[in-house]
Structure formats: structure tokens, C-alpha cells
Length: 146
Image 1 (cartoon, rainbow, N blue to C red):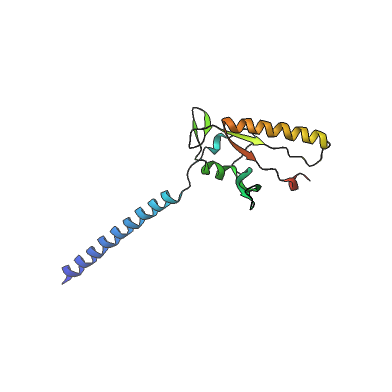
Image 2: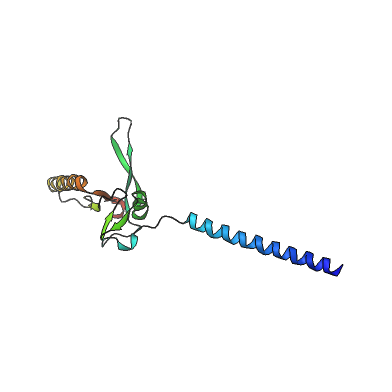
């Protein structure tokens, strides 16, 4: 009778150990699966941080024209682009190099003509960059300039 009780306790002990091991394995696999995709945020260009705000997806009006852009951060945008480093260059999932671009962002105007010339110059520069690179545009929050 004593042997029966000892064997029962040993059996329950083994079952408990197996269940605990199974839980640990499930937890470690869940942790691996829930971790976000690693991005090369440690090698960003100077002045660009993982939490720097950038323009995300375009918000269009009824006629198909772009009204504005969603604001996101560099880290999330690079994840969307499936960015990684290859041969020292930041590239997207299609192996196209990624460049960052800063639009004209001023709180105080230099005058209409100067602003318009600078805006046109930057728009032309952006168009040229977009032909060759995937361009991530830095967000300009005018409220922070005041």
C-alpha cells in the first residue's frame, strides 16, 4: 500500500514536471513570434532617430488627390519597407536604396518669392531622388517651430 502511494506521488510529480516544461517551451516560442521584425535603426544617418516623425501613407480625397499624409516614425516606416543594410547601404525589400528627405519647413518666412523658389528647388530635388531611390520624407510639424 505504501509503495502504491509513493508510485502515485512520483507519477504525479513527473506529470507536473512535463507540463511545466511544455509551458516554458510555449512561452519562449510565443515571445519569439511576438517580437517585432528587427530593423537597422542603430545605423541611421546623423540627425535621424528611430522616433523621428516621417510621412507615412498618403490620405487621398474623393478625386484621388493627396490631402495629407499619416504621420509615423522612422522605425515603423522602415519595418513597412522591410529595410535592411546591404553593403553598407540602407535598402528596402526590393533592394532599392532608401534616402531621407527634408521638405521646406520654416516658421518665419523669408518672403513669398524666396520661399517659392526654395520650395520649387526642393520639389525638383525630391522628384529626382524618387526616380533613383525609395524616399522617406521627414515630417514638418509647424506647431513645433513656433
